[in-house]
Image (cartoon, rainbow, N blue to C red):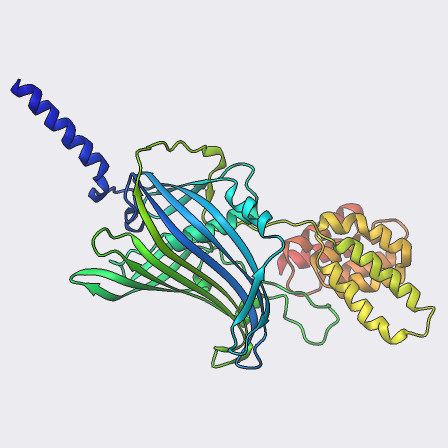
Length: 437
């Protein structure tokens, strides 16, 4: 009988240890992930807003805001299931007399809510630092990127470190961590600051100018002209250590038109999380599909481009203007044509070039030259390979393209295609010059 009681006591102790095993440490789990205890479900009210405008002058803003209820279930240590519910999308329609943005429910709010709440995302923290997502295979990249933003805000800092290399939506980022409030020896308020340029997946923006332009250099990363930073503040339960409130403000300021690196053209992304409740669960089910594993860093979304039709439309309008007395509109229309061409990749521009040449070869060639992107240079070489151009002119143009500064892999590839088509001394010299630079 004594043995039976002892066995019963051991079983009960084991059950309680598993349920409250949150205090046990897992060497493969980060301290940030350990803040969320196993067999618990944390429910948060979440809001995110994006605004763009010019601060310090007349108040003018544009942007949108959405709010959702977030459920973070913890079936096992370091493993989570993220569910998004009850979303509402609103958009800015004006500014109040106090300078605050006025919001109204978007007409696409219901569609947005359906997309956000349709699938759950399983999340694992591996090797203490790496956050791995297991989304549904039908989840769109746009929605998945939004859920990545939620997770990035939820997985708070390791307050025992002053500097840490943290997984975020921009990849691994150097983060400065500062404890701003304590209850006894327990940190309760923590601030995290990041210069987003230190993140290994932070992608610089590029713009292109005409190779004939007097002022060049904009095909270098525009991020050098933009200050990008993020500040997050976390409040934590002093006993159970989970996050009770969080706010993250991401700010991008265009430095040439700023004052004290604060006022001027800017864009902001603001996220807030407030804990609503914590409930116990009894499900340990966590069986992700390894074939759909993704990182926390955002993926670039590919949207169908309308620039092909816009380029054709602008070229047709330019032809019409040549027969009217509205020549003053030609410069603006030509600029729109060049802008549309700059937005095209090789897959889109390749089939479009013959159509542009058929409409007006002189205007098309001028636009491709002024465009300045590697894809447009490829379009020029595509015209040269059509067989309708004199070999002398073809060699001269190819040679000139090879001498342009700052060659990239795309331009080298196009010059290689040209050298394969026309094995002349000029094409080989252009290729070798681009490669050596």
